[in-house]
Each structure stands twice: as C-alpha cells, then as structure tokens.
Length: 90
Image 1 (cartoon, rainbow, N blue to C red):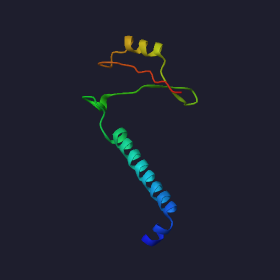
Image 2 (tube, helix red, strand yellow):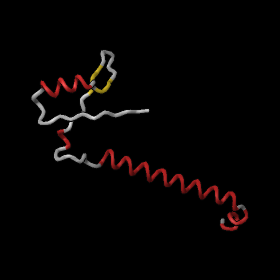
Image 3 (tube, rainbow, N blue to C red):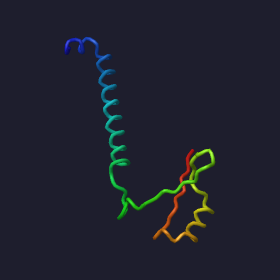
Image 4 (cartoon, rainbow, N blue to C red):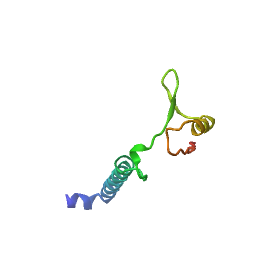
C-alpha cells in the first residue's frame, strides 16, 4: 500500500485531504449537535423555559408578533418573567 501511495502522490494527497475534511466535518457537526441538543440551557430552571408560537388554521407555525408579545406580557400573570428575541434571517 505504501508503494502504491509513493507512485501516485497526487491521488494520495487527494485521498488524505478528503479524509481530513470528512473527519473534520463530522467532528464539527457532532460538537454542534451535542452543544445544542444534549447540553442544558444556561438558565437556573431550563425545564421552565417556553418558546410560544402561533398556529394558523392549517397548522403552520410562526413566531408571535411584537404587539402580541407585549399584550401577553401586560395581561398574562402565569409567568414570573417574560422576554423576547428578534431573529433575522437572510
């Protein structure tokens, strides 16, 4: 096998680069999945954190509008604290 690799250094380099990139990508993806899925949220009681969404009649989900959140924050007394984030894409 080593003789074959010496005879075709271009192929050997391409194969090694492919292995390195593949292993690197797999490790990166596994690290991200572990951090997002398996690590607890950085809150005192992460099981009490909720992410409300609205549901259309045809059951499509979307985030709540700012005005709706402000109404909930003012009117609903079921939560100790409320906070909102705005996520942009694109």
